[in-house]
Length: 370
Ligand SMILES: NC(=O)c1ccc[n+]([C@@H]2O[C@H](COP(=O)([O-])OP(=O)(O)OC[C@H]3O[C@@H](n4cnc5c(N)ncnc54)[C@H](O)[C@@H]3O)[C@@H](O)[C@H]2O)c1
Image (cartoon, rainbow, N blue to C red):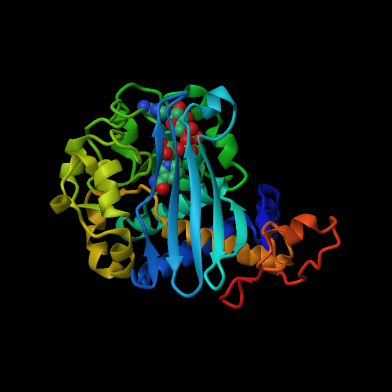
């Protein structure tokens, strides 16, 4: 049997757990997964997929992870930056499937659009927690869409953010950011910065997040300029060949540029502008050996975030566990379970509802998804 977890189920999880607590749990679970990451036990493959420019610039790609002896997670994600203006739908749309490696059955299929935003925020929070000044209070944000909300929320869980300086190429999106944040961060002041050159935003920020849908070849979105010596940057938007948000000069000044997945960052992230020799520790090493890297808090640092299947596995398991505990989601016979295993026609020819449907519920607690 398969548990379907929809956006409504996710909303019920958020209501039951609390959004702050859910994000805290995700930051903690991801931190634990990164700190203990053993690539022989938790195997991830390069993401791959289809990129196209017709009918619009976009891609659909898949991000697989194997937790050896337990499960396979595959996130399928679409990126279509014109969606918000063309159809009013998110730029990033995703689902995650969890498979039981005992028999290959699909145990969970889960909405992952919101989960992607949450886990991307959690990854930035972990990098920020190691590398940003402990009293960082001003957060600059360039690109005020979906990722901006969870970036700001997650970073506020690890630093005392009081003020957000926000810029978006579309002033209407920047203009609604305060209202979108108010339910989770009522005391944070959001100031829209529209000045060309973004000098004040760059000069005043303790932490900067870039999360734009800038087109490949059109970046950077942040100029070179005066900034706090301790500025920490989470560069989230560049995850496509030719796409970049930061100027090469800023990257070269940084005392550390930390990729989440080094090869992927060199191909799609800010690290396209660098070589492998320029890169600092990856996210897992940064979190595992945090005491070693905290010494960079007084200097310019960059987290190059392109997204990792491990993050999607952790997020989906967290939510699936809550759904199982709370009895949420819809358990369906998506694949034939009550059948003669050698007869593909047995279930097709059984009158609807008369097959011996198994009563077993999918569960995550045993370690083997049933
Ligand atoms: N690193 C990761 O793991 C990860 C995860 C999810 C999304 N992303 C990337 O993050 C980016 C943002 O995603 P989103 O869901 O917030 O999209 P979104 O469409 O909700 O918001 C993007 C915003 O960027 C703005 N923008 C575009 N070009 C700009 C520019 N030059 N200067 C300022 N603002 C600009 C747009 O007007 C829009 O409001 C995407 O590129 C997406 O691929 C990365």
